[in-house]
Each structure stands twice: as C-alpha cells, then as structure tokens.
Image (cartoon, rainbow, N blue to C red; front, side):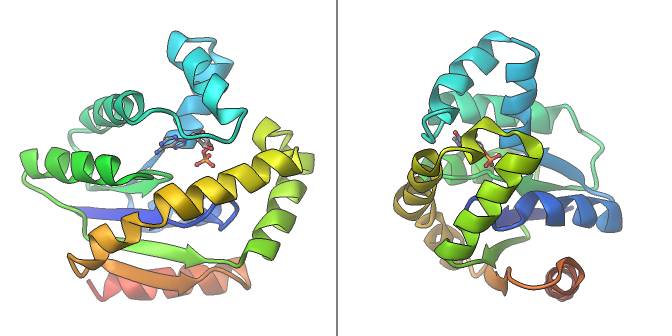
Length: 190
Ligand code: AMP
C-alpha cells in the first residue's frame, strides 16, 4: 500500500494537492476537516461537537478525531492506499495512526510537508474565506489561532516521522503543477 500523509499549516495547499494525488495514484483521500464539515452540514451529533471547536480555530479532541478516522479507514478495506490530509495533527493521533496501520500489516510510506510562510498562508486563507464561504477562513483572529495551534501542537508531529526517516519537506509556494510534480517525484522515489 501507498500511505501518504500530506502535512502542512492551514492554507498550505493540502486539499488542492490531495485531489491531484488521489487521481494520479488511485488512492483514497481522507481529510478529517472535510469529514467534519460534511457532518456539520448533515447536522449530526459529531458535526455539532466538531463545530464548537472548529469555529474557534481549536482542534477537535483526539479521542473523537481518532475514532472517526479509524472508522473511515475501515470503510475502505480494498484501498490501494490513502492520502491523509489534515491528520495526524497531534502526537497521540500519529501514534494511533501507526497502530491502526500496523494492525492492517501496513504503515505510513512518507510524510510530505508543504512549506509556506505565514504571511502567504494568511493571504490565501482570507481569499478562500471569500470564495468558499468557509466560516473559519473569514475572521483574522480565527486564522491566527489556527496557525498558532499548528505551530504549537501540530508542527512537532514532523519529528515523529523524522525519527522514522519518513519526513520530506516540499516548497508549497509556486504553480500548482510545479508543486504537484515535486510531490510526485518524492513519492516515485519511495
Ligand atoms: P482543515 O480542513 O484541515 O483545515 O480543518 C478544519 C478544522 O477541523 C481544524 O481547524 C480543526 O478544528 C478541525 N480538524 C480537522 N482535522 C483535525 C484533526 N486531525 N484533529 C483535530 N481537529 C481537526
């Protein structure tokens, strides 16, 4: 199996590049943010809970997020592999993902991290807020909170995969296709 974590701060381009990667490598795309948003739209209990954290720019608690991710992985027993987008965001999530994949006799192939500096992220998120209407992309204070949460809670997850020699940083600024080709080059060298 080919199991890729597409990592990076909010606004780095994970969603855009995931769409292209799943088509190119025939993988299943699991975006925890997308799944939470679908639950909010469907007015489920999970959606209601997630919304209270998402609108403040905070992380949804690990226990809830991990349970949801595990059930999504289990829905795709014949997948050739996965792109994990927006997960794991904490050390506990990374450990849970490793254990889950191990129980299926597979593992993470690579963590690819899109690198984009903070000023550019803020510009992109505000633009996306206007275009998509995503609530958490509208208020500068919520955007700042999400970037701070990324720096404090999520960025350390790089070390978890770095220790396994699976971490690879990729420049996330430039044309979409140029970034996509750089990601493919790294994946093809696995
Ligand atoms: P995203 O679409 O990845 O930017 O995620 C939007 C929001 O969903 C985040 O700001 C969090 O509130 C929540 N979220 C998404 N993925 C996770 C995760 N792995 N752990 C905790 N919260 C998450």
